[in-house]
Amino acid sequence: MAMMDDIEKSDSEISTAIKSEIKRQKEGLELIPSENYVSKAVLQAMGSILTNKYSEGYAGKRYYGGNRNIDTIESLAIARAKKAFNVEHANVQPYSGSPANFAVYCAVCKYGDVIMGQNLPDGGHLTHGWKTSMTGQLFKSVSYHVKPDGYLDIEEIRKLAIENKPKLIWVGATAYVREFPFEELGKIADEVGAYLAADIAHISGLVIAGVHKSPSPYAHIITTTTHKTLRGPRGGMIMVTRKGIEKDSELPQKIDRAIFPGLQGGPHDHTTAAIAVALGESLRPEFKVYAQQIVKNAKALGQSLMDNGIKIVTNGTDNHMVLVDLTPFGKGKGVLLQDAMDEANLTANKNTIPNDPSSPFYPSGLRLGTPAITTRGMKEEEMKLIGKWIAGIAKEVCGNELPEDKEQRNAFLKKFKDDIKSNQKVLATRKEVIELCRKFPLYPGMGILG
Ligand SMILES: *Cc1c(COP(=O)(O)O)cnc(C)c1O
Image 1 (cartoon, helix red, strand yellow):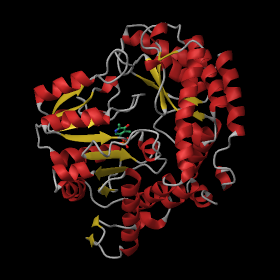
Image 2 (cartoon, protein in one colour):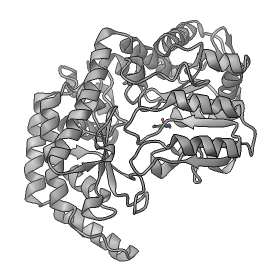
Image 3 (cartoon, helix red, strand yellow):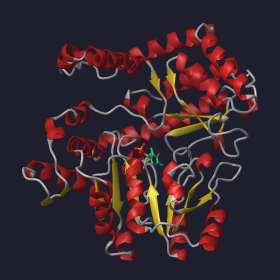
Image 4 (cartoon, helix red, strand yellow):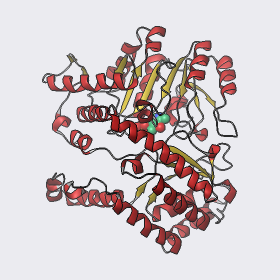
């Protein structure tokens, strides 16, 4: 497929940057748990002429003419979402996960209402009421936490809910390695009359495949991104469950109105088509095998890290993610490991861990995920190697102390980044990483991408 022919001729600056990014993706191991590689079919839908169309409104009720094909596409996306997640209603128009979540507030809360969500440094998402997000400023946000062992503290959640009587409770996170207790949270929401919104942005692919419990029987509302384990284009969805309609028969209309005209204008129809394609893929038997392998790989990666002397939060994982606890090396070491791994073509992100002794910008952990490398076809044997490589780099660089003083720290990190470029251990690992990547090619046979 000649994806790049025209852009190469017309815009060399952008095409050069895209080509460098293709090389980076092909020769590196993508270990950020929120990333994935979409199929060629999804890429083709994304790159289609559907981007030319305006279609404000919903199927059969548009504000522009010429929408018969868009109606077909959006209706297919909705039908597949309802089937995949076993829900009564789906809105596939949110531009991404964060706007989807904001629309939920607009649908069920008023300015100043009490809301509850998982604390950000404990793994929660910005949009669940963190203070720097508008969701923490427009609403009275009460955060709940994980226990020192890394598991959600259900007793605290119940106590806070009874004390604060929230209108809306979020369950879902960006850095949580255990199964979400949807059933328990559903009971707590019912006890206090709150809506329970399950934000399954990270795990939606696992939920569809049945390798993570579904929130559908317990939550009123489900939101998700479409680009993480679901392996679709960047986008978002909001769904209403049967339980949600039983609580509030108007909920589907409230959600739809919150998205349009409440928050958004025209939907991104090329994205909607790509979401439909990804959902179609997720309903096939191969996807179930894929999702099972994601979890097997995450468990194998965690085990390899532990076998090589690295501590991980909760000593394991139930999903696609492993949280490395670097506190045995001191505090705030996540940044050192992230930067050194980057130099070895191992892409991951620094992250806070439960009770982090440092700050979100200099956290003491690292978050790893297996969705992307599993898409590439890697299995337990490769996880063993990758765990060994990461452990080796951690031991090489995490002994460095981060200065407390801000200026000294910046100078130290600048020198660290320079030094790491010629570190023999890191360079030797990079060579091995590139060799492994060549054995698991990305987009083989796809013209310039191949
Ligand atoms: C990724 C994520 C989001 C936000 O998605 P964006 O598409 O980046 O806006 C929301 N909630 C959770 C739990 C996430 O992990």
